[in-house]
Amino acid sequence: MPITKGFRALVDEAMAQVKTYSVEEAKAKLADPKVQIVDIRDVRELAAGTVVGSYHAPRGMLEFWVDPASPYHKPLFADEGKEFILFCGAGWRSALATKTLQDMGMRNVAHIDGGYAEWVKQGAPTETLEDREKRKAKKG
Image (cartoon, rainbow, N blue to C red; front, top):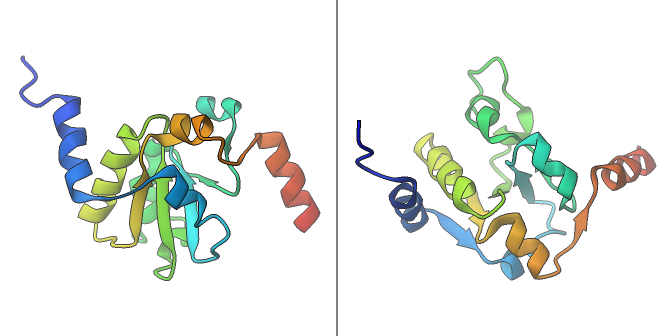
């Protein structure tokens, strides 16, 4: 069966319909308590590090974690006062995920253009999972 709409067309359609932040714009929001950066990459990708302060919500569980009717719902996503800014490796999965969350009714969602690769390329702040655990332990 031939593919009638490829991934690139799907990503392009999503990009036309979602809010996209540059790395610089997203970086400027890191300290804002009303913003939550969300890493949707696969757990195996986290070994390379992540955005400082990001919340990991694997792409495969995102819709279930967002929907209050789901047995897997995470209360963090019910905070309508927060803006959720998603990122993945290159910005493709996060564009699709942002579009899906919009389709579910969320309006407080955006993504980072270029994903984690662009974040790192521009020297924006990152942390290892070990660094994150140490930071959480100090707070806690």
